[in-house]
Image (cartoon, rainbow, N blue to C red):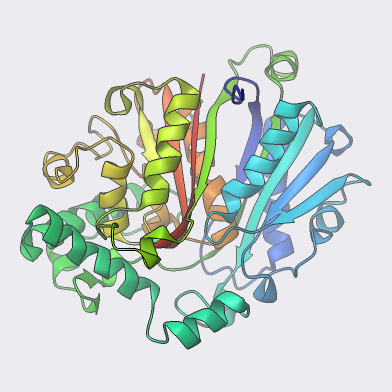
Length: 400
């Protein structure tokens, strides 16, 4: 019977670029920027790396389909390189490959990289997939958009839990205001400006009830991690307590939500399943009490609200109470999005999952300045790809 990977892998180093409209650089430049910080943090040489994984989603506007761009860009000498893609969860997918390689004994030290260069398309949102998925969207659901799909989850939530649209919109505005406040303190974030609840509520509607500030934008950026065994980590950094991977789980829809009528439209089933498996692997019995902080996939504010419940932090139908009580604020009981989240840090698809881990890693190491959370023990990341009814979800838990 599978025993999981708890405490079998340590994060030796991490790096992350500034996210934003990086017109002055190419995707390869972003990869080098994240890699250099990561290598300096890890304190190793490139000859020490046994294998590598690279996550990117839109290869047509990024670095192409092949994994060869990673070793060529970073000048990694004749090691294995694998390109992975899993919608917006591509960053965590690269981390999963590197982590599993170390946990299995196939590699002593492995590198995970995620990067995306989306602003060069000149399009404000995600470009269309030039793939079967894009064809599916155009032919079967020609009017489907990401904001529209998640807006349906907002109305579904109101219907299931008898919540008024006004109360929901106010709660969503508080989520976005919280993330903007955190992102304003982060020098690497794309959007660094405080926004009030009133400003958010009065912004133009994108897909009712979601307004402009309920939707994350896209960015350019890259993030990188180097993982190894706990024994090697202790040898290389004898004066530091290693940051260990406690759990890493993934769940991908079978299509049940879309093709049958038993999905309530008010939650994301893949998140629910991946979280349950991650808690079992990490030995977490009471997530609300044991998790210290979170980075979740807030592509839209309603996604963050539903995720609170899907992760078993807020009871079903009660997330609004926790939001109103400041439970998820930076100074609350369980801070969520301490770096600003997708909403403010930005969302270069292939980098986002690793960016979330980068924040949790720095928080656990006490490196987050005036955003530092007091004495964190466990950090959780939630990386979601696709639509509420057709999604892939990765949940990772790291700690000392």
